[in-house]
Length: 226
Image (cartoon, rainbow, N blue to C red; front, side, top):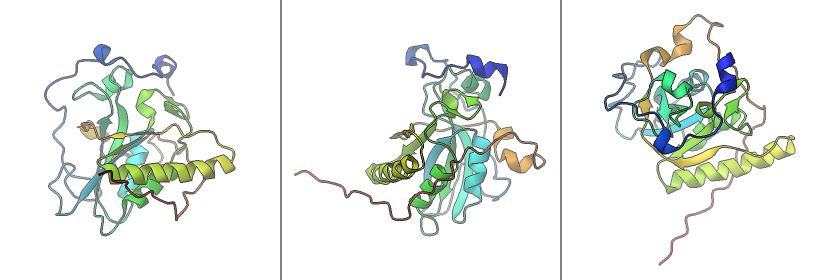
């Protein structure tokens, strides 16, 4: 945690005051250094994607690329207002973006529910706009869903996890569940960062609570109105 963390806004900026960004991407995504797959596709037919934010994206990305059935992962920025932001701009708190991981996965080998298990069990979702000493809007807990099915699954997993957290003495989950917004790829040096640096040199603490998500959480069926 740097002295700058004490001055980072812990509230979302007003959209009309967010940094302007730029029209062109800051990076052209390359190849995954661990999986050997494209960071931005094309991927095999049937591949789906999901977006999660839970603190420092270096460790969050590693949590997912280790999961069997994951095709590719990439770190980036989402949930804010500034187009094609830089890391420095995101750190300022003036873009509204969170550090997130884009997960491309084969649903025949790994389910969305399994991805959610990794998400919930690898951070503390009761912390608002921070994870431990990492403070600011960029570190908020975030799930972005692509359709109503994913939203129902995500909300059901949240409710089930809240029960377990409450029983363990934790407070209210602060995770945002929102529709997908544009995903902006982070700079190349951030991609698979913990694979590129010597073991133990990458600062990215794990703030997991140790509480497990129940295996049998119930998803409410869609209700259709004529």
